[in-house]
Amino acid sequence: MACFRTGAQLCRQFLFSGQSSIKLFAASLSHRWMSTGKYEYIIVEKKGEKNNVGFIQLNRPKALNALCAGLMSELEQAVKGFEADNDVGAIVLTGSERAFAAGADIKEMQTKEFSEVWRGNFLSEWDALSRCSKPVIAAVNGFALGGGCEVAMMCDIIYAGDKAQFGQPEITLGTIPGAGGTQRLCKAIGKSKAMEMVLTANRMSAEEAEKAGLVSKVVPAADLVSEAVKTAEKISSFSKIASGMCKEAVNAAYEMSLKEGLHFEKRLFHASFASNDRREGMTAFSEKRPPKFTDS
Ligand code: CAA
Image (cartoon, protein in one colour):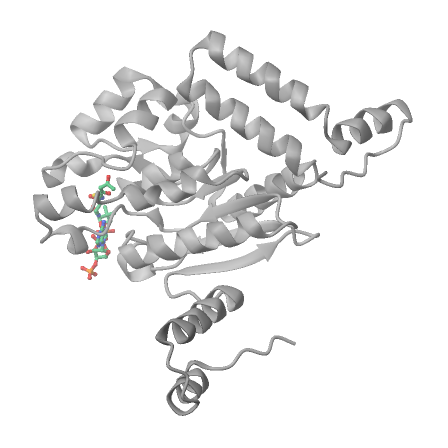
């Protein structure tokens, strides 16, 4: 049974035990927060028959999951938690049926000044998701606009519900995409379509997004999460060393020339021969039995 002290109990202990360290108190709270998964803006759990899929649902429905600082900080914590969880082989990130996310929180940004966003390198903290070493599937229903579309593109695979809409409407606010919209969209769907979306704020339907290569699958909205979890379970059933290497190699194609990328891929392929899982996979094939991967 989980046995965590309440915030009030921790407060009392802090006030009366004579312990002078505020840091200790904060650390206890933050440990409790992460351990129990009690978040304000997201729901975090594990899914799948083997409990090996990390599941994060953006949960700020009144604001259509607008990505305020608190939400993004919780998302980072949740991703880090699943990174550290050896049972989790893949992560699913979703929103609600109405909105994956309607973008960065405009009301929070409204009064910010240039010097503040420049000096604080505003939005740089959003990169945590794209640094996750485990495969992440975005399951997008409803609006994926501005930062919402950008967060989806930070994931490795995008599945869309049939009513999903993708867009980069920042130009209507007098600004531009600031979390990868001009870069990742261009690589995903090509310059002309990306330019059109960024310059006109026109939205792309799920069907168009699949045709353009932004999403890999469109499913009925009600089936979206279970489809994404099914795929995540499949990925989780393989060696985590192999899936990590696959992800790293595919992502290298974004950054490297073909020659460099091919070399990098070959080196990772060679490196996989150092793993027990590579030996087990090939032995199991030869012995006509399912492999038992140990992530070693
Ligand atoms: N930030 C803050 N609040 C938002 C929001 C956002 N991005 N998007 C929606 N909301 C809030 C609305 O203000 C509204 O709140 P109130 O009820 O308190 O007024 C609530 O969510 C519901 O929204 P609507 O009433 O507008 O719902 P709708 O169905 O009529 O329209 C919508 C939906 C088309 C998504 C519309 O809300 C909209 O255009 N939202 C803004 C989309 C946008 O411009 N996103 C880009 C943000 S900038 C960015 O993301 C920069 C970046 O690169 C990171």
